[in-house]
Amino acid sequence: MRALVGIGEASYSTIAPTIISDLFVKDLRSKMLALFYFAIPVGSGLGYIVGSETAHFGGSWHWGLRVTPILGAIAVLLILFVMVDPERGQAEGHTELHHTDYATDIKDLVNNRSFMWSTFGFTCVAFVAGALSWWGPIFILNGMQLQPGKENMKLADVSLTFGIITMLSGVVGVPLGATLAQKLRVNYPRADPLICAVGLLISAPLLFAASITVTSNAILCYTLIFLGEVALNLNWSIVADILLYVVVPTRRSTAEAFQILLSHALGDAGSPYLIGLVSTRLYQADRSSHFPT
Image (cartoon, rainbow, N blue to C red; front, side, top):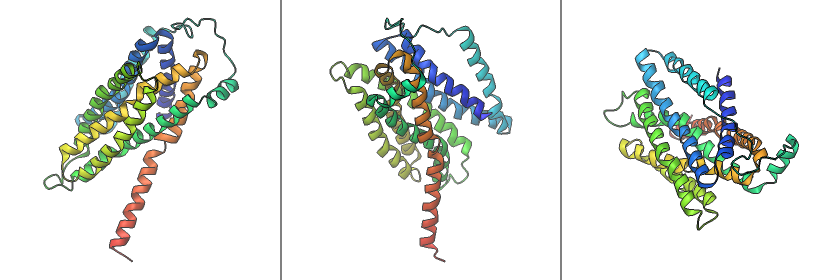
């Protein structure tokens, strides 16, 4: 079932941004991409909220999954009856473009330095986002249970708050990144990648500080997580915009697929496991130092 969901996610993530690029250009395209990618962190946050609350009211975790097919059915109806499919390059006036074979597309993309570097950078975003979404609520719960009076705190309570923070960080971060890019690129043509880089550099110390304060100050910890996620979310629409203006229209779907595959394979697909493995090794090393055999 998860694999089937993944096919749907990969399909729309590959095709939807290219359809947006065929409908809009320049700043209007950036705004539409921001609106589209706004849905990712907001939807993730709503997932924590809807999943945890539905499971709570239903008395079983099964209800957290039973509600999602309803939302999926709505998405299918919207795709069938609302979405249009323009010609490739329509908004840019390139209506006589011809497709090339897959091998030629991949060769061109690999030699496109702007595309490759932005893809590697976005892989870092996916790595952090995947690990944070997987381990964030559990880590916060374990830390807060060390605070006096919070020993009986439940994961559902933390997931609800974490979901709200994730959703709000998307509401702020995605449009903020797009707005900064539109304003700054007028005088600084290379503003897009610099905003992405600064966002990653800012998020690292903020999220680290959140991990330190979780055992002493819940409000400060949540605030730091919110700010760190806002900095991460600056990347979403900008990276998509970079891809669309450095890749020709007929190769954009292939470029999206390549970027998604690489960022997930090297990013969020393995980051939860890797973080868990490192955490286990550190825990074992700490216990060995305190309780030698």
